[in-house]
Length: 270
Length: 270
Image 1: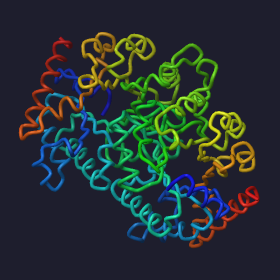
Image 2: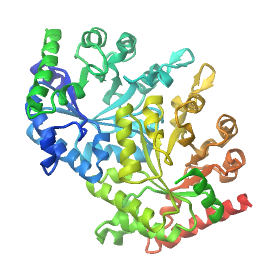
Image 3: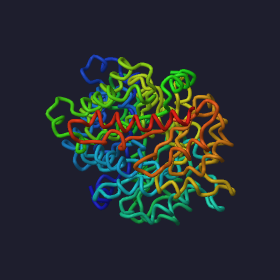
Image 4: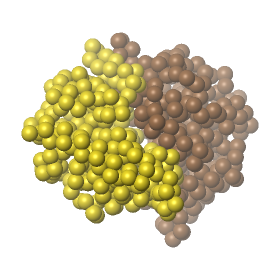
């Protein structure tokens, strides 16, 4: 999917909501455990109930890998279901990968070709030659970790390199990489006050913003400082939506919470 | 496996060689493609031919994920084969994972419990709460990326935070984390001149050292500056061993190259 197609979809749905499919088998309704593939069954119900309210889904690969081959199968069924039934939806493999050149190409193939995701999250620590292999895929986005939503972000990301924070060096340096137009960035909603300065460095790129809801980030603040002329934001909510209820009404409850966020976004967009 | 068991094994075999199982299906002998699981068949032959010459195997997960569920099955068969047939061998999932707390726990379960690896490589960018969930597993090692072997290491890792390089900040900060005794570090052999200073910061931890061979790192230099009283080094070679030949004699050729490295190591140990 191209960036323009994503922007068009945001305007059509009046939503820039991304729903995180971080499915913990201990948190889903017990009756689903009788199904052959409880995680896929859960995802399918969530997707069918919320696809008109969001523009993106983001499975976090950790939650699938934890169940080995069965988990990988659930992930494959989930992405295939989205791509076939709702091809207008943007998909993000939240995998936080990154390795030396040749190996990053293998990861890129895994997510862009084998699983047909539109994008993948990548860690910047290993630098240019670990990220450019992802950027080489046209009409696929590489979403680079910049300033993450967790407390540990203050360990290294906000430390200063030559009087400038590490995450700013990551933003500035990555702009010079080949095919940098395929970059998006992860910036946590819990760091709303940083968005203004971030937008001065990268005015045009989309930002994937986790941390609204359970982690305490504020939607209005993020939009005030983070939005650009093309919207430029994908706001992610995972637990706040998919675990809205752990009873039989889990999909309806998820839709209700997604709808609340979509309504807030519609107000902001208008 | 405990650190002491690994050290004992190094003395018994007079080797601190780790063999990287980074299997690209385009580089293995054509006749293996007729097998039901070419990658596992290749790995099994390599392992049977080299297990007495090395103390560790390190599959890089990218090379398995690139083939989807089939690849994940090959990885599972490979780790099960090592754990059952050669339980004295130390195993490393070279996965370079890292995510916020809860999610890192899922990754740790994937590699430590579901696949029964002894260790996993982890990226430090997200800080303390992204790494401590891995460290919580007793008798399992978390191998933190410090100074990697690639050119991109100079993009951020060697930049200076308050006049100190990022990788040194990573080393010093990570020492303060809970269960830091379960840490090892990745330091590239191509950066041999850095080992002396690294050993001043972390005298005791094991270092996983890629980059000897194809990438140009020098074994003697690494040992001179990186070795400690407990040896404290695992030297990895991947391509230089597993692709020594792509003919029918690939396993024998791999053993021959592994044996050369083992002999060099034996000389150094004596």
